[in-house]
Every structure is written in C-alpha cells, then in structure tokens.
Length: 111
Figure 1 (cartoon, rainbow, N blue to C red):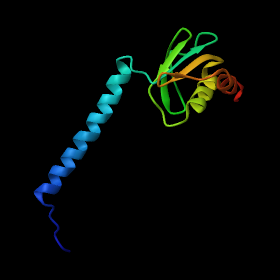
Figure 2 (cartoon, one colour; figure 1 turned 60 degrees about the horizontal axis):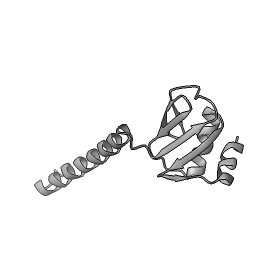
Figure 3 (spheres, rainbow, N blue to C red; figure 1 turned 90 degrees about the vertical axis):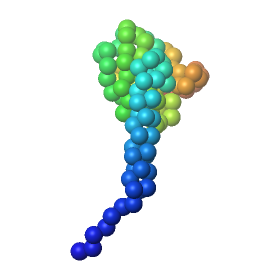
Figure 4 (spheres, helix red, strand yellow; figure 1 turned 45 degrees about the horizontal axis):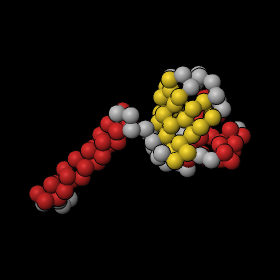
C-alpha cells in the first residue's frame, strides 16, 4: 500500500480553516449572548418556558418577550414556529425589520 504524506503547507491550510470556523462560531455565539439576537418577539401572554427550541433555534424568553439567534428559515416561518410553541405573537422582528400586520396574522394562523 502506498504511503502518502501531506506537505507542510496542507497542514497549515487545515489549521487556518479550523481556526476560521471556530472563530466564526465563537463570534456568532458571543453576539447572541451579548444581546445581539437576530429575532425578537412579543407574545400575547408569558412564554410557557424560559428556554426552548423552535425551528432549530434556541429561544430565550422573559415574561412575554423572546429572542433568538439567526436561523435558516424566512422570518414568517420562524414566527410561525414560535407561535406554535409559545402561543400568539403580537410583534416579531428579524434583523431589525418588523413583520407587517398581514404577515403577523399569517404567523399566528399557522398550525
């Protein structure tokens, strides 16, 4: 069986890639922990749980206010997932942009 050896440059690229990926993950976590939540929502009544997962993001709620880091779905889908898990949503913002009244009604109508 042939013996393959990687050049030292390949090793450096692998280390740089791992450092970049780790740094991005840390930056994303730090931004969310420091109040940099991408999603913010107000519920009609207090959330049933302080922390829960809806649509693959962790939501943190205090009373009727909830926030979460960015997910991969459209804001309306994220809002609907939150409404199914925590109850009716009275306001929802994604990246600082609020859902309009029609989208908010769709959010709460989704079962």
